[in-house]
Image 1 (tube, rainbow, N blue to C red):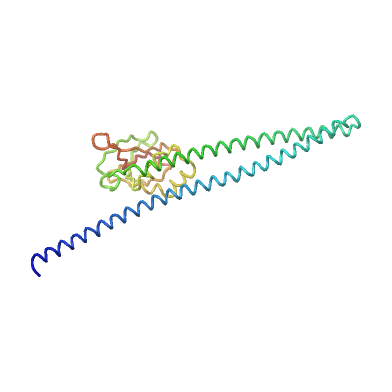
Image 2 (image 1 turned 45 degrees about the horizontal axis):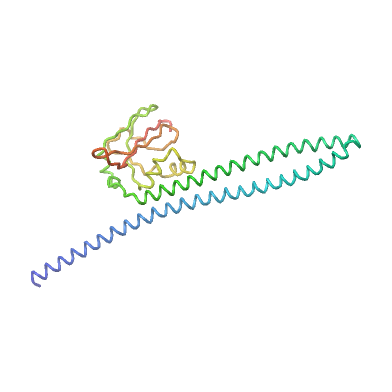
Length: 255
């Protein structure tokens, strides 16, 4: 084989290796996108199931309201009949008083049912607004490119902590966030968390935070929403680039 042929063969092998490497990179990116899409689908499914349960409860309350209305109409008819014959006997007068008392109780029950329906409708409206907000944030996240600082722990370790000690425990702890942008945005929105979000945090999402090498505290993070719980976005370079590669947390020892 001539030197030219050897050179051509080497170039061909290098090109093939580059193509394989590019294909592997693309496959990894596609897999990451699939995982993010699956997370979004699971969230939507969960919210849909919650909405279905609320609709079921609303239907039950409507049925109860109809039953109360029917009973009220029947009682009102009975009251009218008793009023016409009230002067006949004292026994009829006593029965009328009993019916009046029961009517008042039913009116109170009707008011309570209406209050529950109003509250349920308000909750459903709030849930719809929350779902729409999540959908908007999800679309914004999908359209916004991820920070390059987000990729490696080494990039995170080059940044200085900008936090202040907790007023309760006086210990500042730096943690590297080892997750995707959508989860980070969800964490930063912790002030709007509901119980399901707190459960998600305690059941695994907190494990996405790793202690930095130069952190001052070695205790494991466990997470507690009510204890000076704060996250911060890092500012890189000249102070104009938001990278968000680390979180600041202050947690009391008792948690």
